[in-house]
Image (cartoon, rainbow, N blue to C red; front, side, top):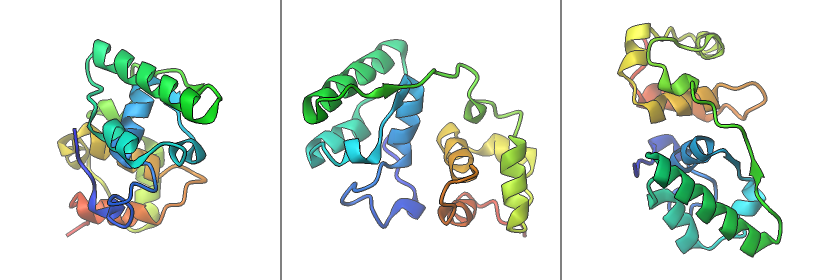
Length: 152
């Protein structure tokens, strides 16, 4: 999974921010990576975090261990861990989170269940993350447009 979204175009060349595909992997392996930690690792290490697989149990464990060692080596502080949600909302194509529906309605969009079902788990993940309260939501409308969810 090496997918960068168009709404991330302003930072993917430099990887100065954590792209959605890495954030997806972080949630998959239960690691909370701060942007300040991200800035302590090299460009090559950031690119490795983009390209390393994190799908199977073995890959998830290897990704987690690599990242834990990397951050400890670069910062001297263990990385924070998070519980892994085995029923993550982005993996459920049959139920769209109410908070996402509400955020979409705020910008005049109605996402149908059919549209939600047709999105990839990474796209659903991005929409959920971009629609959270307290998150800078400037990319939410961009993601809606990129994923062709604009009402016709």
